[in-house]
Length: 117
Image 1 (cartoon, rainbow, N blue to C red):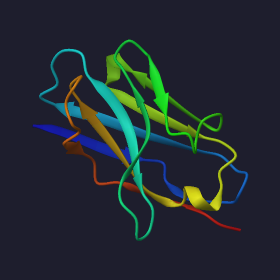
Image 2: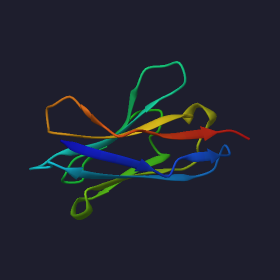
Image 3: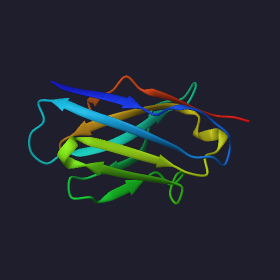
Image 4: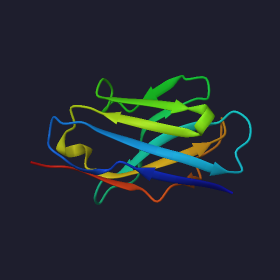
């Protein structure tokens, strides 16, 4: 069983910045991916960014150049630096951890990010 706890969400103005954090604990073995998904109001959950244990990153087109994912393997933590945020970034952001080739199935409770003036 893997536990994931996100933090760092809140209200931010358009053009502002926010940093999300997530710590994983429990039965974590071997190489694994960590990532962030989000679920905007009334929409389905979507991928934001993912990072491998080796540090390779992939981003949704909508956040490329604005968001940066990073991780600290020693602490089992993953971060999402959000810059130049837009109202359409408003969503509940979820942290996930999964094995290469697997579908994410471990989720945190989510943290709300609201971009509004």
